[in-house]
Amino acid sequence: MPSGGARPGAGRKKKDGSNGGRKHFSAQEIEIMLDSPYVAYVSRTTISFTIAFKEMFWQRYCDGITPVKIFEDAGLDVSVIGKGRIDTLVKALRDQTVRGLPFKDGLERHINKPEKQFDLPKQPRFSSAAQIPLTPEAIAKMVQKVAYLEQQMEFLKKIIMAGTVKK
Image (cartoon, rainbow, N blue to C red):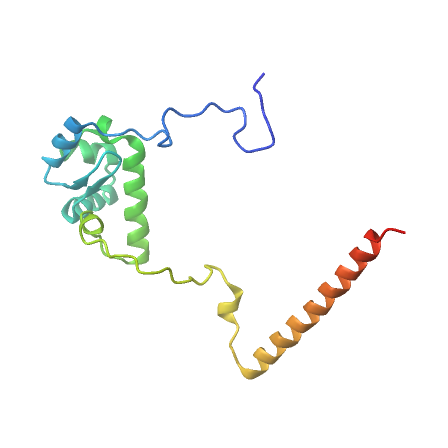
């Protein structure tokens, strides 16, 4: 009987290594992959492909050829790269195509990495605030709502405090 707990994944065996089960490339595998004209960048954990490979891959994939077959035809060793990385490439290319974005050379993000000066706050993805026009009436309504909620909070605090006072 597996030992379990309240947290997700309790009782499940851990994957080998701290990389989430992803295979690390050896120095020899990195050298072999860098010899390919389709590989832009390789590190111990990541591999990036050229624009030419991505365009060729996507065209053949849309023609109904399996991703593994495309990699094999390009001279890339599927057993070294791994099925997970191939599936991730397919998903990334599909997302870029759906969004109408051009394919980028995988080397770009590794060479000219801009220095991060400071973090800017981002608007929430599915914010209802983005749909509310900020007219003076809407702002006045929000101010009134905040004041009302503050009154409610004070009332709840008093109720809680009344229940905890020792008699």
